[in-house]
Length: 81
Image (cartoon, rainbow, N blue to C red; front, side, top):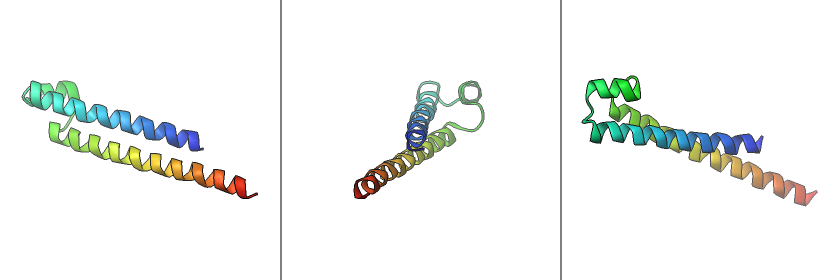
């Protein structure tokens, strides 16, 4: 269960970073035009994509911290027994 939490955290961080980078790329290099936004980001605006990416990054960090706490708690309980 802890390994799946670590995997989920890594996936959220990678995908969140990708969303932020793509949002910034379209906003800066393609001037955030509507056609470029639809082609590269799907729906929404570049700002919405960047906001979503940051939320995914934060969620990944939180899941990673919870997985680390669970791993340490499991190790401590095994040492006590």
